[in-house]
Length: 276
Image 1 (tube, rainbow, N blue to C red):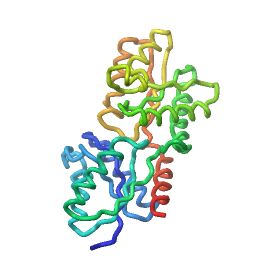
Image 2 (cartoon, helix red, strand yellow):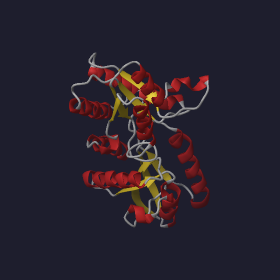
Image 3 (cartoon, rainbow, N blue to C red):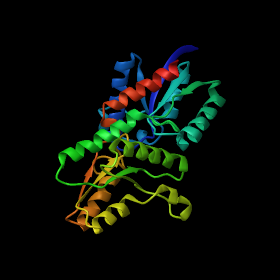
Image 4 (cartoon, rainbow, N blue to C red):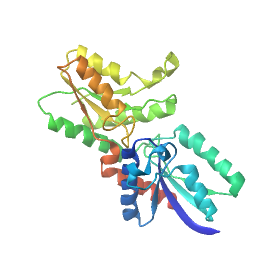
């Protein structure tokens, strides 16, 4: 059996090629910084993308990748999550898949690094990334005073929402009283039991437009482009629908977290801590 350690940079996965391509770029840059080979691996979905859309190289997903490595005799892995907090993927999906693989291949030594924004402490560098992205848009459009909303995907888990709430609080501390950081979700389940998610982005934007605001900044709590974020994603569609309804209202969307160079230093720190 080989003792060679395999390090996986793991995202949730998307059917959009742009997500896998950026994940690969991040893994490549992290490889250069760490001196270790970093494998870009999605938990699910990405294997549905045709190889022609990925420069001829098919995307890797967790179970097939681990199976291939186990069959080659590798049993030691570090999973570096490109995830904000302890989502269901880390708490349920990954442990269950490892359990099933161990039934066939025996013991697996899998170490899971801390998420990018672990509570209760958070991660100041991620707050700074979001601050930079918001400030960039404010500087590009200085004549307007923009309401700012921090937007995540939305989740039935209160733990996931707590990450956004903590981020918003830390961002507010950086901006002080110059602006107010509000919060919204791209989507949420119906029912009062999910009110902890906060308002839908569509409703938040429409409310601001009806109140006479001329513009708003949508701060993206998303790492990678895909079905929801990035060009032609759901967020962009939601914003376009509102500006179509209110032609005098402008919406400015920040860059994605995965496009900021500061993300690499967070990932490198997580990797070093796990290897120690």
